Length: 460
Image 1: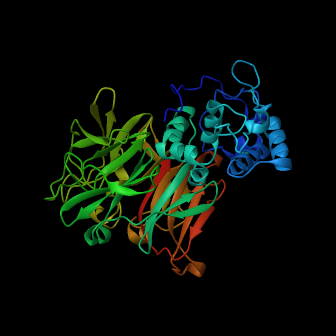
Image 2: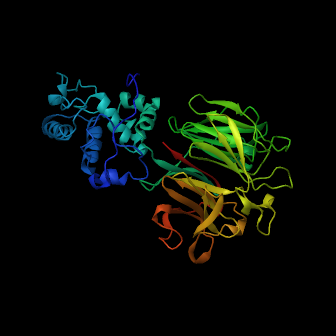
Image 3: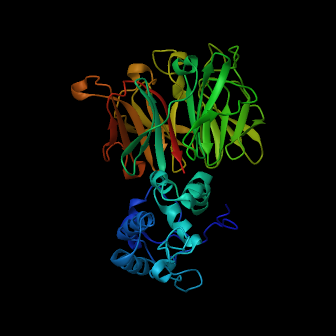
């Protein structure tokens, strides 16, 4: 089904915060661009309007006759009359929803009284946690949600919701929606027992969650699709590996370094395109490294830390320019990696996260959050961690960027006891430094265990 002839990016300017409605304020940190082009940028959608849209969608599934039909038509008219099209005219309202003699509405639009272009914009701005319910309304909605088109439209409109995907030692994969404070369990991965019990790595790219591990037959990648809500096998890398650094930017991801099946430390890198489902070999890094971390910052991919052999650790970093397809070595980008009592091989890869194109790290030795200074290539302490990272050398702890916030996920309990509770702490770096606001408890999960095995944040 073709929902639009083309997708175009909006070219409007962002309004000042003083003009934002409650719903737009609620989308702070999740939405990076202004409202869709089919809405006049001087109008705002109130929270009641969104509730009314939900009512319209639910009413679309029921028999809308008599008094109920009249009330619905009035509500549709009141809502749609506040939306002005790009041509300056109000959208046409279908009086009485064009009921036929059988009592069934012949208006086959997504939302009664609205053309599909406007309706698609509205649906794109709704929470993606509501998409499964929308798919149950009728065949047209089911086809729309199942096509993945809304996610492409959201990307063009700059609409982003960040969900946390989490797996703990006593809990299979679950997704957490910070906006609705809702946990959702994912289906079990249809893998063999070897993959289930072995160490795994994860990465969110586009609308996919990739989980890397080993099966009896060798390296394997399982992919969870946000569109189909199912697991399937993802094509293997050109050179399968583990213990690599990785990060994603929109629909692409880059993995660098790691170890091959024979334990050799790699300096190769590959790019994954989630739209095509393909891996592309990139130029080699300057040095081989494993147990490293990767991230995107200012549109470039970086890899820091790690070890170049089984005994030699690295304090330098490397920057990959996608446009020039070249690597640049940065000396002493992560000098603290050599500090501490334990050998780096015993510690987790660097715990790093990028918020607003600023790099932060969670020090596994000092339990401090540090910020990277791009100008003088140095690190400054900005805050204490809300949990202890040194107790397990950084393992079992997640340190991620979630929109404009830093996210720390680790074990918690009452009175210092381990009660199998995982706590999600968040902090907005723009609120201040170590003397500013404390970490906020975003959520907690009981009976999850004391160890965060894998964590990925998906923004779409």
